[in-house]
Length: 329
Ligand SMILES: Cc1cc2nc3c(=O)[nH]c(=O)nc-3n(C[C@H](O)[C@H](O)[C@H](O)COP(=O)(O)O)c2cc1C
Image (cartoon, rainbow, N blue to C red):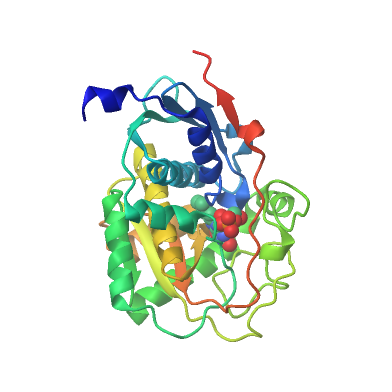
């Protein structure tokens, strides 16, 4: 890159708008556990531990995955706006909440960035039962490649035996987790919330715990009609990483975002499922039985074709003023 391009100013409003778009990222119970510091030519992502769910997410995995998803959303939003970003992950060992520092420079927009950026606004977590059209193999191959490009592995669960094992882990976690003190309270506090800038709104939750989607976390009942008890035909995917440290969890969040955005751009519905990863014995079961001990599972995904109606509303987000601060150092 020549020095004239490097010297070109970075427009702060453009970067601010990119951060606002990044806050559309999915997060555990829509907690939006992030803070952004905006400098002249840099953006810093911090975890907001006040929004951590200690009973649900004792390891902090969901929090890191959520922040990783927001980081990838930001990289896409910046790239689509013609801003390049060199990303330094976990840049300061003395400050563990500082998850990423992005050094900004003038960049070039590629068509693929525009396609992914336009998926940000229309992506939704869809908890309904999916229809029985198969997801074409080339789509699955593209999603697998998208995860690999972010340093993670996406396993498509095709055979009956591992599918039943994943469903068993999901069921087992859903049965065991309510015994964790504080878990039910966190779920109640963050679900079926209306007129709130965070939490999962009633409009995005099924009217009753669905027998059709045995995989579903038991949120408070909402207002979303399901497919009248028709069985769920989703494809199950497990996203994993080589090890289970914080860097891998952050990168798994980036991969989760890449997979969700690409799936959305292809017209597919998605729903992350993290409950079996939050419970120690089901997480180890997934690792050893489903992934053959070769990969650390980070999150499960349901993927497929949702009913076209009703269209799901967007879940709310906190106002930019509450999450973006100027960098004062
Ligand atoms: C790490 C992570 C774990 C999640 N786990 C679940 C889950 O177990 N069940 C579920 O229905 N949704 C889950 N979600 C989806 C969130 O509830 C959803 O992203 C949030 O409510 C915002 O809604 P949106 O994705 O439609 O924007 C998870 C999301 C993330 C990022």
